Length: 567
Image (cartoon, rainbow, N blue to C red; front, side, top):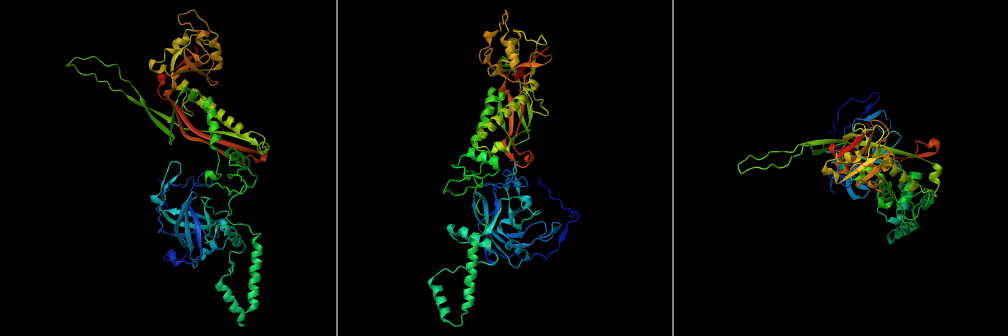
């Protein structure tokens, strides 16, 4: 729930007094030119979100239809010329109507009111510094947990000229003139606007009508020939400037190099090197931008992320052992579990009372924790095309993500970290020795595990402990020796080794565990994301690559894991 509180203006901020807003005109009552505005852009310029951590998507309901008209205001906030001024009364400078929707967002056609003084702040500047911001009926707006704007009853569209202290929430907004021209002429018209926006060029297109009109003017001695020649000279001078004029709202084109075919691996490497989320082009291929993934908007390509996940799965003990993986959008997930179980059925007689025996339910609360990994790479390495940087980063992130999961799920304390099985499990056996394990104690610990959990059971121990156990021999009835440990199993059950499992050689250490990993819950809040930190380490000529993930874990049944402790 969001609450708005009316407060006095901050100290030093003064309200700009304006005349009351006049009756809003209709769209058809306003004169052309007509503008086209991307007022509801999908996604955002900050990892897919805007400066408020929110984003529009194709699922956003804006309550729009083709006939609905909404007022266009000049920035609902700061004054136009002084950051210490506040617009007390909003300025309505035009009207907007829904135009169309595409993969970039919702577009509006806009006509501006020339009678409003602040309109000149929009029409008198270059289009690239004009941004838009949509306003909704606040109490009706609804948002998802991840910041997605689900319902946005559009009430107004604000336009403003940006500067160092007046910035849009979403940099993806677009404002440009709408012209009925062909695609081939678009670039020339855009350049012409850049040369002289205040004075449009009147191009004389030869038609039968205007040829006759010009002929009549030449035959009419009252026509000022010198003025006509001067007009043509002025037109020629303006056209000469077009070739050198900078384009307005030109499509983004790669500046560093041509990457060839649309290979997401190469796109990602280029993103790491340059920070640009656009792909290079083949000859005669339309420019690519980041509006859609298919056009080059790759931040983390699927196969790069897939390689990381593959490496993680290869080394992650809980995933290899069959832990229960749960996806959530919450920070704490409550999992219902069996508390007290029923017992066997009792035999009765025809008139005896039935045996009443209800099972009890419990609950395990799994907290999701954030995890990060930062890799700093030298600029020299990033500039070296021969280096297999993609595989290096994938291997590094995947390996240490798996090691993090192993540490947490084995020895995590359950308060500042996910809970580990050596913490949430059951102390099944205390070994007789402080720095050794007897051969007969291995099957003793194994059978501490309930019969219902043994089918999917597996061992966890350190390499040092495994090497020690392989050297054991005994003449007891529970013979335990090298023959009982094959290449991947111990007493018929698979084992996994980890440096995070304690060694057998120290008193009070928990050195060996047998358990059913399906009774362990790994809860994932968010998948892996990767960001490029361009400026943070610029002083040492390095670039930071930051990976983040969020997950938690807990033992759902303590009896499903039995561990042995050194005396």
